[in-house]
Image (cartoon, rainbow, N blue to C red; front, side, top):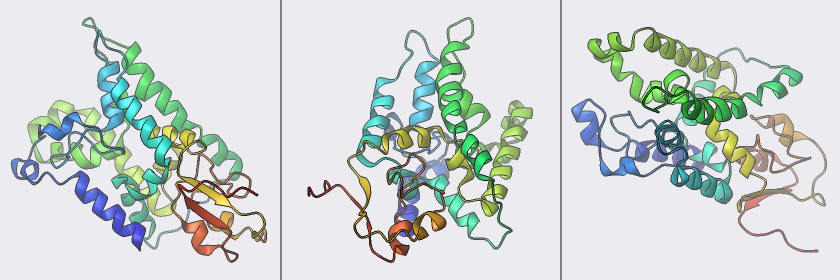
Amino acid sequence: MRRRLVQILSALALNANIAGYAAGGVSDNAGKYVCVPVLNCHSCPGAVGACPIGAMQAVAGSRPHSVSFYALGFVVLCGLLLGRWLCAFICPFGLIQELLHRLPAPRLVVKPAIDKRLRYLKYAVLLILALGLPALLVDAYGNGAPFFCKYLCPAGTLEGGLLLLLQAPLRELAGGLWWWKLGLLLALLLVSAALYRPFCKYLCPLGAIYGLCNRYSLYQMRVDRDKCVDCGKCERLCPMQAALLSNANSAECIRCGGCRAVCPAQAISAGFTPPARP
């Protein structure tokens, strides 16, 4: 319940620009020059900050610049502080997926071998769509397109792109791209009812960065092997199917705290306090 409250308050805080909703268009408030730590579309009328992946693409696709050291540094700093805790507590699109998964829908089970391979997709999305193509495929003026935002990001479609549905001229201008993004969003939302956080597991480039930071972040998950009774309940009930017992800070763990809640021996802890020395 505490985590859900934090998620809801975070989603409201990240999209609290009431004037933008009143205007019905993309706002240009001063906060748009500051990155937020999660996917939250710049085009959302209520957005109070900039999406870090969008900011990195914008700089990568513009000459003479190629790397947004501010956006990249900000994301790495957030990752080294909290890792994927941000995915579980702050990300609005993560909240949407979780709420949909509470619906009484048939559950989809992905075979472990297939699931393992699919987990690498988010790293490909990061390297190719979010960073590589915007910098490499440029027009005659040296400008590249924000490929991840343009062709994949469902958070952008949900928060900003749906404005096109209400504005026929813009919808017609987007053409087939609009219908592609809408179809992709609907597909991911439907799958979310059957599978826990599919976008986070397989496609999110920001989750890929934070996952790589999990092992090194100041916030750490710990399993006290002296207390652990090897019942395996934490791994069986982990919605992200993280291998907690072999790696408490797995790149797949979003640090939601569910494992701590179900551990009968109270062997799992989390926090900034360094582990006690023997």
